[in-house]
Amino acid sequence: MKVTVVGATGQIGTQLVPLLTRTGHRVVAASRASGVDAAIGTGLGEALRDADVLVDVLNAPSTEDDAALSFFTGTSANLSGAARAAGVQHYVLLSIVGVGELPGGYMRGKLVQEQTVAASGVPYTVVRATQFHQLTDAIAGSLIVDGEVRVPDAMIEPIASADVVSVLARLAGEPAADGVLEVGGPERMSFADMAAAVLASRGEELPIVVDPDATYFGIPIRRDSLVTGPDAEHGATSLREHLAQFAT
Image: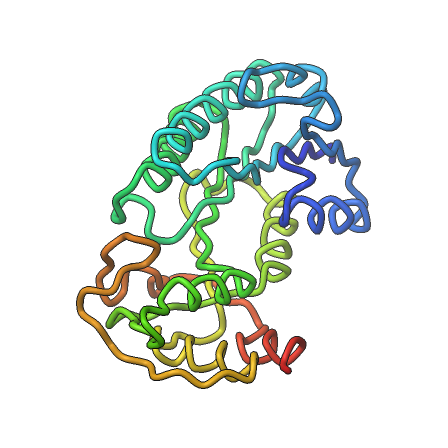
């Protein structure tokens, strides 16, 4: 099939394009570098010409609330319209577990993105993923206050980005689900255990304190806000296996 990947130069896109190519698909790697700007709609017609599948792995250039909301609102409208006009048969969208529950402009933007794709008339599959292993270092760092790691009383389910890429590549070759698939890591752990694993990999020792007022990048979360439900798929690579590659 012909598969157009939008966001091809990002963390997921740079892994997905070669995997799809090795699988035998004809792949168009669409990004601003190739003349495609989904935010303003330029280059989409050519990028989607004769495409069977569109895989949208775009990420907002800013996490600031208004900017992120505007970005996802605009890109999803432009991509959905272009996909419908091109006769695309499957729109695969990468999203985040917790969308629809967590506040903030970024999450609202992702929810608008999902809703726009679902209402577009193009057959679709939304893939909601948990936090990537690569993000856990930043998460742990954001929780350090006055020499302590103050963590929320919540669970997290980190996943390897390569495991998410494998799911996206597989779905690109399957019929649209017209629904949502959740994908998470192989194990749930508390924020405290996640922070301890990250610190150990860096050779650091800091007190870890469960704080009911601690947030996730400023967002209050419930215990299960960031973990998958019972019907989710799960990756194979654990956080500890990932961190072992960088342990000091």
